[in-house]
Amino acid sequence: MKKMWLLATTFAVILGTMDYAPAQVYPSRPITMVVPFPPGGPLDTVARITAEAMRVTLGQPVIIENAAGAAGTLGVGRVARAAGDGYTISAGFVGTHVINGATYTLQYDLLKDFEPISLIASNSWLIVAKKATPANDLKDLIAWLKANPDKASQGTIGAGSPHHVAGVFFQKETGTIFQFVPYRGAAPAMQALVAGQIDMIIDSPTIAMPQVRAGNIKGYAVAAKSRLATAPDIPTVDEAGLPGFYVSSWSGLWAPKGTPKEVIAKLSTAVTNGLADAAVRSRFADIGMQVFPREQQTPEALRARQKAEIEKWWPIIKEAGLKAE
Image 1 (tube, helix red, strand yellow):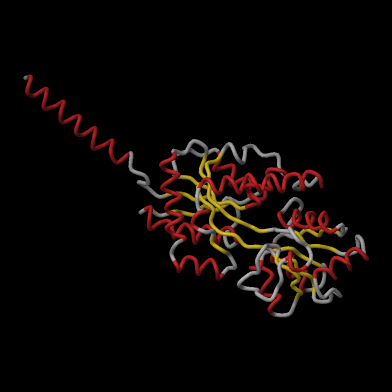
Image 2 (cartoon, one colour):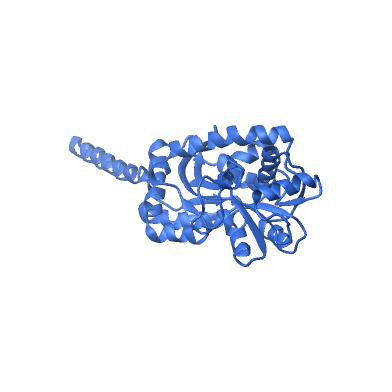
């Protein structure tokens, strides 16, 4: 009887161990990456390339879930409320994880309610204007704007959007005044610029460069410290006479607060391994994005960048009284 009891106990322990071990293996099922915008947009494209690249290391699919609305706050909020188990993560960019904190009353804290995973890629924006603009370079453009206060217009994708914030920053740095015209997206705004309905836009090279190359609009400067590989003839703002006017759109991944460090480490490693692939980097280059250097693809680097961007943009936004509509 005693032997039977010992055998039964041992068998139960073995079964318990067998049942317990797989539960500790992460990931053991597909991961959901929430994209807080509709399919087909810039962040959605970045997320899909990254998700596919992460699969190799994780051994599980990373499934994209588009949860659009309110400039990304709905989708990001969904991740903030999700379990911190590593199976729900958020793709985001400077708009969702920096600017929205100053233009919206959020139900979550951008720093306290998320665990950073990794930076992904960025692109430095361009200052462009309609073809009929009399200015031939950036200094001429600024002089023309100063000579015609409140007569020119800049296209944005809505009040409080990154495009709007970039325009306010431009006004602050140059002492110019012009109107802001909101559009439903970057593409409609660019169409309006090509048609000459507005005077200028500050936007990503993905949207602007095809029109610059076609001769439909004028490209004045790259809002960065270095020229773009895809636009080597366009000077930087430092070269063009507006030093320090740096504007870029960068993307990253976040997990809900409380996600275990070892899970964050696996996710971060999956991103780093994926972005090291030449084919993946080429896909990003094709859409005008630069992959961050390997040493910046860490949770710590993403947290540092997010904090630095909050310190840069929130005072500008609040001074201008910008609020999302």
